Amino acid sequence: MTDTTIENQIEDIQNEEDVELGYAHSAERTAASLSSSGVDAREVALTAARAGDDKKADDVTVLDLTALSDVCDYFVIMSASNSRLVDAVVDEIEERVAKTCNEHPFSIEGRDQRNWILMDYGTVIVHVFTPETRDYYRLEKLWGDAPRIEIA
Image (tube, rainbow, N blue to C red):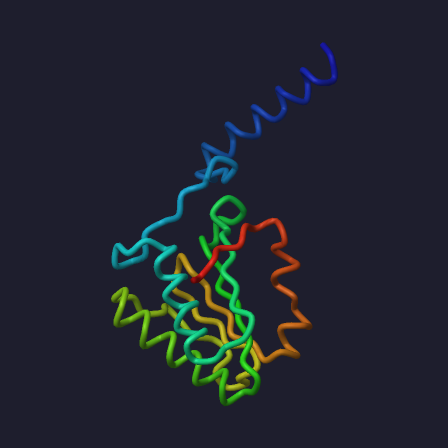
């Protein structure tokens, strides 16, 4: 037996064990999920992005993670110039997504600190940063392989 044959057999055994344990592999995952209310995740992400942009958030970015992550389908990332504006942007996103998509976040984290607020819509995660915090964490660089979606 060649090394390649042995490696392929080991991989097949590991895949069988993963299936038996209920683990899913995401290599073939490319389609976005529907939100809990049945709205396409992409539409929730774009609605959140447009709401942030309308409320004067800076550098609004939507990353398509459907082929890269099993956690969610889209990241919406934006900055607001100060902590008060961060809070106002989050309020606008929450209101607009509820009104347009009938979708509410499962949780909102970081409201007390107001330098990075995360809104968890399940299939979509919205990040609203102050510029300094966004520069520090650089999520766009971390997820550099993710395609960007135009919000226009």
